[in-house]
Amino acid sequence: MTLTQLYYLITIAKTQSLNKAAEQLYVSQPSLTSSMKELEKELGITLLYRNGRGVTLTNDGAEFLLYAKQIYGEYERVLERYKKGGAYKKKFGVSTQHYSFAVKAFVDMAKEFDMSKYEFAIRETRTAEVIRDVGTQKSEIGILYLCDFNRKAIEKLLRSAGLEFHPLIECQAYVYIWKGHPLAKETSICFEQLAPYPCLSFEQGEDSSFYLAEEILSTNEYARTIKANDRATMLNLMVGLNGYTLCSGIICEELNGSDFTAVPFRDDAQNPNSVMEIGYVVKRHALPSKMGELYIEKLRHYLDGKV
Image (cartoon, rainbow, N blue to C red; front, side, top):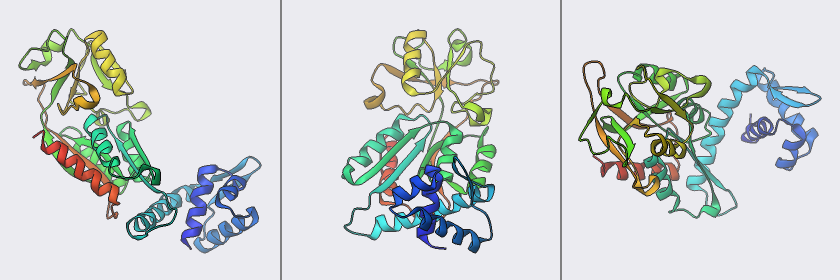
């Protein structure tokens, strides 16, 4: 088994076609097919199912692909760290729950690199996708939070994906609203005061679960609820409908604007204010890239100013 064979398999899985993969790899289709058959013979499993419409991964192939991506990803990071010169284009990706500070740190990190030599990606996405992206090495780093309610469930998902969680900051929950909201001037807001207004939350899709919610008190009964897929839509709903969301209170005005405010959430016996522990997840024992190290440094620097 060679790194070349692993890269061939990754490319075939991406294109779902031997012909297209051969074109991208600058090899002949018979040579590519022969290389995959040799790999299958060495492993003792069938990786690819070939039909008239192209190729698909078998169940064994899909499982092996995860390991292939991990091994080849480590190889790329070693190249990125030690190889000088050449046309190798380094890649770095972050998947995150909807945190403006995570985007701010990404911006600050990217500014320190020649972006013509890199492929950067940041994905604000659902909780399950954050875990899946880092687990499959689509992204090197993921940003999410743990609390007393979701900790066991999320940590189980992280272990299954071969990931480890590193804490960055602990914070109480805040009510995030626009400055024209009737409750904007309150020193703190309790759950009862929020009853007349729609609760906004980020949709978690088919993986929807109380444990995957990005907001605390996800099991409460809300008279008015609206789900959104992105931060821009949620901010519009805050203004248009006096909506609110429960968040960490760590808001980047540079990206979200200055028209919004975070008011401390005042808990009660029925609605406890659970501590949110925000952190990053990475592959267990993975070698961090220079971009990854700098991104974490930028995260810590920004969050240290919020403590």
